[in-house]
Amino acid sequence: MLRRESIRRWPSIALAVGLWIAFFPAEGQVERASLPQPLTLQSALTVSLESHPDLVPARARLQAAQIREMQVDASYGFDAFVELQPRASSRASNSDTDFQNDSRYGLVLDKRLTDFGRTTARKEAVRAEINARQAELIARQDQHLLDVMNRYFAVILADYAYRARNEQLALDYFRFSRMQERHERFEQFSELEVAEKEALYRKAYVNRHRADLERRLTRHELALTLGRPGELSSELQMPDLSVYLEREIPIYTEIVDQAIARSPIAQARRDDVAAARAKVDVAKKINSPVLSIQLEARDYYDTSFSSRDRYRANLKLIAPIFNGTARQETAVALAQLELFEKEAELVGAEFELREILLNLLAELQVGQAEINAAEAVENYRAYYQDRSRAMYEMEMSADFGDAQAAVAEAIFDMIRVEFQQAMRWARFDALLARPSLLIKE
Image (cartoon, rainbow, N blue to C red; front, top):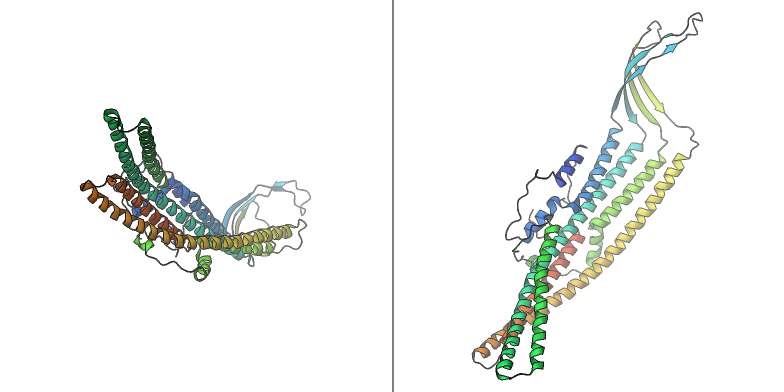
């Protein structure tokens, strides 16, 4: 997982090949360990960051930016080349002589000493771009972790929903079969009443069947989110969400500035602005002078001339005086337009962040109220079940089955609202670039 404090610098272009091998290994080349059973939320979050294809594009864009930085650094390296000049010449000093062999060859070393700030500006631009791609990768990882949490919770909720629907099915079938039997044996109930109970039973069966299919579907979706298609987890461990559910909800005015300052998305847009501003400086210095040094070692077919140096050191300054193609003007104009675009994207990202934070804090407050309400309903259903059991044992009431079904539904609702609240807190932490509380480093 990409750390927020610092990101390890990749040293060579060869890592592009390593990235491909890491995320698209040859069939049979890499055998990954099976998912642990029972699967825990922490294990799911950790596994999902190993090799999911959704993370590859962001990592590739980061590496491409780092490679561009290496290209900028290489502009101050040594260039070495061999120069071969097969040639024939007719010397003006000897009018009686036709063309003679005047070939030469040599070894040339060339190094740029300075371009008076142009490379420095390019370096600033590419460093800002690297920072932007790092922030985007963090944001993509956070979103992927949120997707894993959501799919993990969906599997558990599907299991509890199936239990509740199965409880209701058993109750409706018992009532239908009992009424049907009494109708056939004693004509105690009318056909209309029997048909009503059968309709309820058939509807409950459909709901239970749908819930059973939902259990399979959510497991397939979780496997895909983990990057393990086809590896279905039969048992998932209920996560401990106390780290989320016991937190106090902050006040919007006290947290909004911190969110804007720390949000990975906003930080990426700020770095894009910094990169665009540096590119404007690069464009302004596109015609800046270049000072370089050349070291030459040459040999000649005809060495009779004293002006033919075998070794030479040249200090060369190239300073453009006139360029009729308006290259600099157009480059500066395009770079400024890009800067305006990135600044607008930054303002838009901050506006969107404020809106998301405001809605999220409101949802957290409503979610806390929903948890309190669900707890009250669960307590009531538990008390009601105890009373119904006691009255059933004394043959005073026959609604014990209803009480059991209501308890199962109350438990499902309680787990659902707790999961929703945990998701809201996880989104809040991601918004402020805080590490996931469910992953132990």
